[in-house]
Length: 213
Image (cartoon, rainbow, N blue to C red; front, top):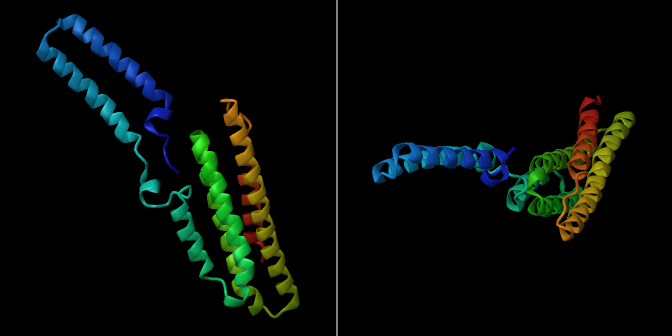
């Protein structure tokens, strides 16, 4: 997941305040000497610069794995779609639509409230994982001949698909909720918890399907 940006971290303002205070005390001690002033400014700039470098996007983002980016998400979803046989493409297109629109909702939420980045990235990972389970189910279900196992495969497929549809609906609601909150210039403190609840529900389905024989 990505780190918070330079200006979104409270430590940034503590650093800037402390640096400014230290610089002021330094000038008070040595007096208004140009060389001392430049040296102190250089040290202060180095400190702030070092912190800013630490706030740059992490390797996760730099490697092109930022699922809040539409193109990155589409590429990974497209890779999953390659597993789906031709005769199951109609079903997959609906799943693809739910996943794609879910990403759009998440990106809009992030645009209004960047502090939800971690939860939104987690949600997008589970959306891709659910989509992957659907793709795998569509790829193998017709290859299973035993009625009992075929029924189990169908149940797993439906569980992943239904959860993906529910996630789509919930993210749409959260997007609307975030948009409404922005009109009042007031954040909604329930959003992180609601997103985390969504993620946990998705993980439960994913784990249940993985544990099934």
